[in-house]
Image 1 (cartoon, rainbow, N blue to C red):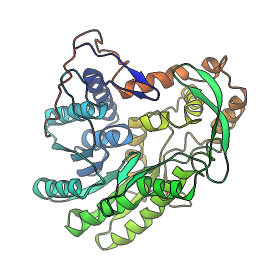
Image 2: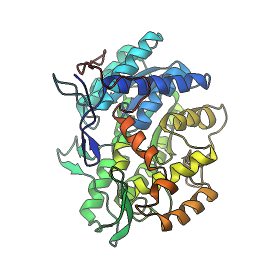
Image 3: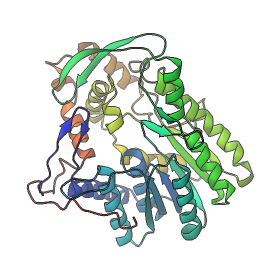
Image 4: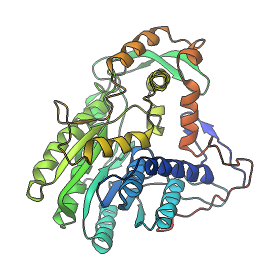
Length: 395
């Protein structure tokens, strides 16, 4: 069937299998163009199908010739209905990895569940023996707690007072004010339960208890800080509390890995267009201004450029990993440069519906959003019939 983008709010209801395949191939080519990285050889990526997780899997496989197991929760295709983009991404990744002679298997299910953890442990035991890198890149709005059976939902709210600031509807370019009511304690607790470090720690405990972590194993989770502009709704809001918990958990995990010389890190990454960030008020306007400036300075990065640099310049250099005063890896360093942030602060005050297309990069934002779902790639015939029933080979 001919597949077109169908939008509903901050989500696209369709995904293009050929476009997703092209997206994966483009990322693979980028990693290969940067040369080999002396990195991990057996890698587990939890949340492996989109964004930073997918980029981590690609950078591991095609930068370091790593065997990879990817865990994700994606919607398979049905006749006449496309799969979610992460499904097609993972299918394309496995096909390309197999062509390159690399081991690649995937598990589709709820990574928060004991069942999926068990399935993953069994696959590592049978196929790899141990892993030397675990990437934790889950981005789910809900979590069914495996021990209590309670369904927790995360919220994006400020803490203490109502937050009011500018935002943009990136579909229309309309710049308006948005107000978000403050969270209550239940909102905070639920968000920390979904997006904090508890599940990451559970994964690492399960892997270690069955001797599936190699000596010197590393685990990395991803976080974001961002500028003072977004601070009230992001870093000092409910999500910020969850990120604080995630970052504190890294130290706890490191303590449990001492006997195998293992380390847990949190990498603070750059603001990028993702399905999650598109739904956060204020963030799309900030990103459109940020993109314009970073592209002008020649320092713009997408997910794959960020993770390739994280691996090549921070994690796998053979030297101690540089950390900030809170023990975090900072690969958001270019975004947070003083000159970039000072210019954004000035542009933010000026931004209107009428001038955003000039002072910001709304077109680039829209392009990246479409790319998430496999649309807008050169070399793909979007008028041709596409087979929606693509399968992930190992599933």
